[in-house]
Image (cartoon, rainbow, N blue to C red; front, side):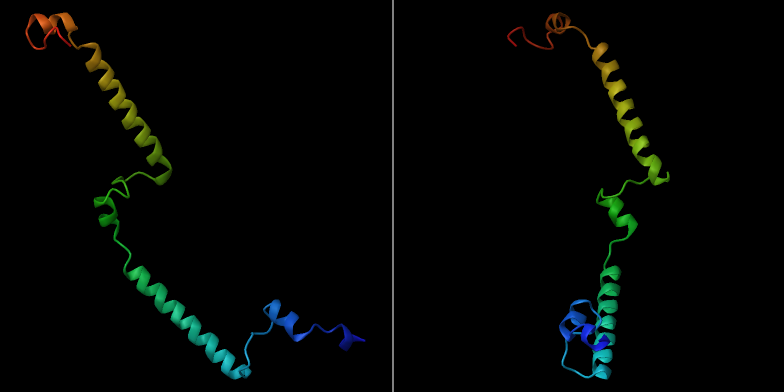
Length: 110
C-alpha cells in the first residue's frame, strides 16, 4: 500500500526533491556546485562594480549627512521649512510696486 501512495518522479521534480536532469546524482551535485560558484562569482563582480558612498553623494543619490537614516527625513523637512521662512521674510520686506516705479527700477507698463 505504501508503494502505491509513493509520489511519482514528476511530482518529486515539481516539489524540488529531485532535479530535472538525466545525469547521475554525482554529476548533478557537480552541476549544482558549479552553478552555485558561478552565481557567487557574478555577485562578487557586481558588488565590486558598485559605486562607493562618496560617488553616490557626488551624484546626489545619497545626502551627505552624519545623522541616522531615521532622522535624515526630519532634517530635510526642517531645512525646507527654514528656506520657506526665509523666503516669506524676504517677500514681506520687498518694496511695493509704486515705490519701484518712482525709483525708475521698473516701468509702469507692466
